Amino acid sequence: MAQPAVYRSAVPSIATLHPSLPQSLIQSLHLDQEIAQGDIQQNQLAEESEHVAAALSSIHANGYKPAVTHDVKATAINRAVTLRNTHAQTQFHCDDLTEIRNILLDLQRRAVQQEAIMTNARIIKRNQHLRSTTPDAALTAPVKEIAGSGLNLVTVINGVALAAAIANVNLAHNPIAVGTVHPNFDPTSMMSNDVYKLIVWYNQDYGIFPADSLGARRDKVMHWLTTPIF
Image (cartoon, rainbow, N blue to C red; front, side):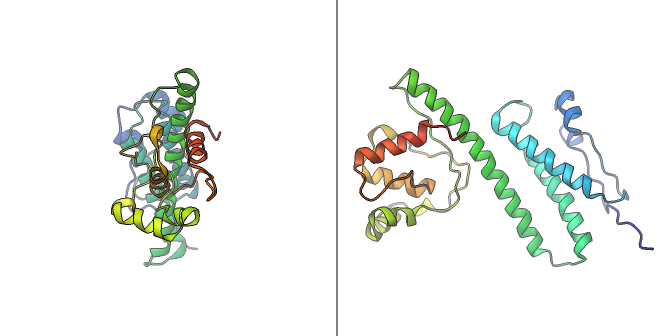
């Protein structure tokens, strides 16, 4: 009878690595769960660690608890990835884990994008409130939440030549990390090229069509800035 797989090294708890976390949070999410070297591997532990990483990512994104810092969130994600990687190696009995690592990296990218989406939800709700109470107040720029460049979107709206011109004056448009804040954001005085540059930077077209006037394009950008999606 085959011996059960065991953990080859200890996996410390999140509470051990971040002892200043509130006890109420530690208890509610079981952040004090340690794994000792030689403990029998359990898929449930990997799944629980992923749920914890998702919960702490959401708490961090929403700012519910200041103690849940970026480092705490990163620790939770790394711990979950470590356990999932351990179980993947055991199950597939292979040394070349390139595909598995790619899957895990994709999960990390999805977690970063989810955090950006949650951050933007807060920003847009705040912008909506400002727009209704203080119309002249400056609006906050959303963070980038879609990876890659929007040059292809500009091409669809206004042709290849314009897209190429924007690329030439903004060589650093890609790659821009998801979660990055736009450095020069001013939606109040946008001309056509400014709208196109936003499309390139955020990789979003805001529902703009080729036939739209400049006024219509501005309105659509403003709608994106001030209309919550959930």
